Amino acid sequence: MRVIGIETSCDETGVAVYDTDQGLLAHRLHSQIDLHAEYGGVVPELASRDHIRRLPTLIREVLADAKLTHVDLDAVAYTAGPGLAGALLVGASMARSLAFVLKIPAVAIHHLEGHLLSPLLGDQGLTFPFVALLVSGGHTQIMDVQGVGDYRLLGETVDDAAGEAFDKVAKLLGLPYPGGPQLSQLAEGGRPGRFALPRPMKQSGDLNFSFSGLKTAVLTERRRSADCEASQADLAAEFQEAVVDVLVAKATAALESCRRKTLVVAGGVGANRRLRAKLDATGRCHGFEVIYPPPELCTDNGAMIALAGALRLKGGWRADNGLKICVLPRWALATGANN
Ligand code: KG4
Ligand code: ZN
Image (cartoon, rainbow, N blue to C red; front, side, top):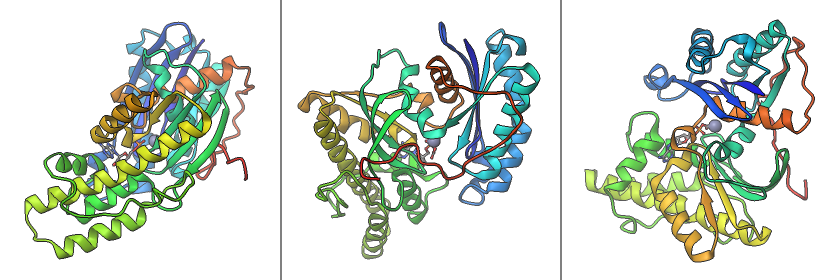
């Protein structure tokens, strides 16, 4: 089965073709970073218009890369939420129209399901069950994953997502958009420990997170410190260490409470080198394996959506090729045991 995946939930237009026998055949991504940079954040209307502009070309290019034509496709998978309503509508309209014309099913995929299954695109031989740490710009969640579609929420952020905290702190330190990668680059030249930032909710006894207070603490420390490059780098390093400390502690506690031996890390913050180093070291100590998606598939992309669609269809999920277009800007992938 060959599935084309379309991702347009935020500021990246992603298209890919996944084959259930041969794996990922082709994938392309257009990032809108330059478009939004001068505004310091994603402008939803500009995002939607750019998805409209890019999508037809990307689909043509991906099919050409995979040496396929439209008629070789068996299904279309698209991100139906969560995300920006207008941006999601562009991808959903394109996917549903394509499926209608080709008389093949269109599968609505949850963006986070794409992220948490994305390590299956690598060649690490990942098998269920596992615990997933989803750390992106919009979400910070820990899930127990028993199989495709079988997800249990173990904990999540009560305010800002980890990536959002990175982006906000970067802005506060005067770094250009998008802040997360820039901040982590600055942190690599700094010394954690010179400033003392809190580790929010590390000892809360549950698997939830809170990152908004950390941002305020950075602001307070910044006002107190000398405005020099070394101070900025040390503050960035301490902030990164604080986020990483909490993420590692909660992920370890989740693995222990579910008695799992595999941790999957997905979402944009999963590209953070300090997070990876600390998780890997903790894994070696505690006897768990940490699996990441291939680096280029850590952030939003069409490949994870194509894969999730293929796995859903393979598992017997029913999908139609009707033209009813429905997107869910707010959509919970799973709820906790008590919800
Ligand atoms: O998963 P993603 O591409 O999009 C969402 O669904 O949100 O994640 C983007 C987020 C942004 O907040 C970005 O700043 C953050 O991931 N990010 C990083 C790094 N690379 C991307 N945060 C910290 N360190 C990085 N190296
Ligand atoms: Zn994402």
